[in-house]
Amino acid sequence: MIFGQLAFLTAVLFTGAAIYVSAVEQPARLVLDDRALLSQWKPSYKRATVMQASLVVLSFALGFAAWVRADGLGWIAGALLMLANLPVTFRLIMPVNKRLMATDPADAGPETRALILRWGSLHAIRTALGIAASISYATAMLT
Image (cartoon, rainbow, N blue to C red):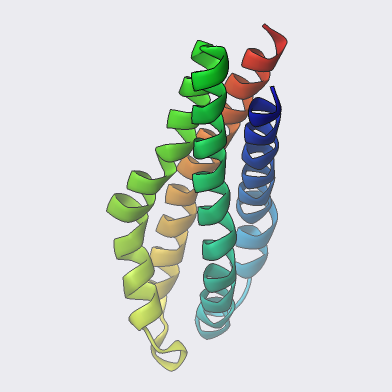
């Protein structure tokens, strides 16, 4: 059961961070002018990437291990929901990230703001996946 509990913990940590970004950090940065907006987004993105990617991989591995041990559908569902963050990030979000990272803050303008708004909408998918995985793991722990 320890694998399942740790899978749940890492999913909840990921989800909490994702909710914070969506509900607090993104709205706060959107009040900044375009240059400051991009200047704030860049280091935030770099710091969050390592933490969130690590939590995704760890939660998937722990959820998979819990499924192997306990054979509950909730464990594998949660693990796969966490893993789904990777293709969402690489296929949908990474092109936006690359464009933003390639933009010099001095050149930031309305297109930059539109990209960061798009990034926020795409990030909400990761938040939803984390919520769904956390619920799946919690259900598995309770059954």
